[in-house]
Image 1: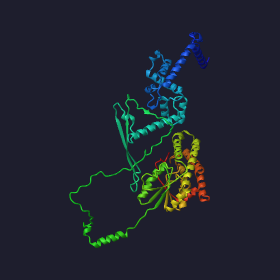
Image 2: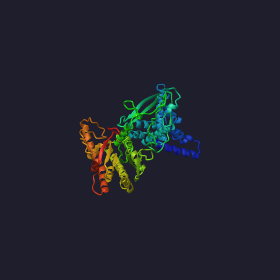
Image 3: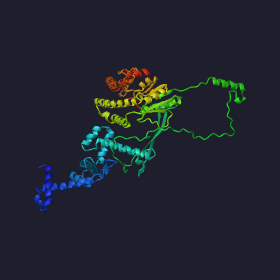
Image 4: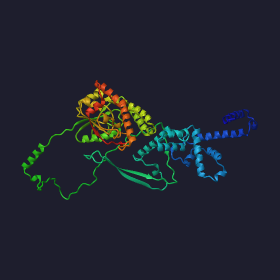
Length: 549
């Protein structure tokens, strides 16, 4: 008889016993095994009830014995101890090792008995630790299928909950993150500090657009007897962190002099002396008249240009802003096109240049969702995919991005109000980062020159086909190919294939759609690449991204 059949017979026997109230218990038990099975049945019910009543583990601490004992019922631990050890074996076994193994098995039982609804320290800790170390979705899911870890989705939610707690502490402590073991430490210990400078773009022609900062990192080693502070996990459906506004905002430092004003022993009369020591008061009136005429003869009025700036996002906008500040500082009038669904451009913030807003038909939520999906693909999925899977996934994302870009382009070119304002603005130049297409078409319609601020395109596709940049694949590594200029034969072959694959993808996803759009707007067959080449001047820049990804 199987164990399942024995349990069914036992339940039927228990029901009959309660109905008949017959005290001749031994007559209904078929054998001694039935009596033992009866006790096992009641023990299982007791342990299940204890598991349901045990506290949920909703904090992030450790996966050691102390944290495990909080969620493992005493009845389950005693049963496993009786099952796996006896008094004779305990003398030859390490007690700590035995307890750790028993608690590990007990946590698996708690997790299984609750249908995965009661994650234990072991399952949370293993899932988060494995994901942090490998970034492998497949490995986490494999451990979850074996009952040793929470699911991959739960890992993402746990990571997000920990990050939200860190952000909360950051704002609670006045925009400074202080780890809990710094302020809650009960035992003596050292807090050590490391300082270093952060210097970006240190030297510029005009001394502007530089970045200088100092960073301090504090760290402290926990004492052996010190308990790890627990982080309350407020689990939700979010699987990625939403950065609060102003989290990474950089504000200009006020470089006001703190030196005291100078003190003079007597009255000071401002005067300018010549080489021989005489002052202007000593000069004859004729000398002063001649100086004034000379100054007026070499003075002329100078007016800056009227510059229109194409919209952009993210790091591209971060790189563009110092350029615009420099242009304004040199007397130019700058106006920036900004879509109504921009994620990073903020027309309400104080700025030396102006904004020209326009409406688009795509929602900000859809753009943010696409951005999060692309980042998740780049960080978590790409390294665990084959090249075929990467390209299929990449093409799908690029198609959606291209459709969003064309909808944004509609907000400018197909808006009579915006186009009327731009034509009446009498701009002298259009400055653009070509990450969002259409600036060349607008420049051609307005009849003004176009300047591109470009770091690179994928596999230098735009530069090679539209800017006539020489880039032989045997010598020049394609941008974002993870190759360097020191390639062996196999890497040169791969670089050649990389160029061909990217050119094919760019043609079908980017250029084909743009050619169709440009032809529709102009009413004649138009090549977007030829339009880009005919109107622009390239300015390459070193952005915040690395050359070799």
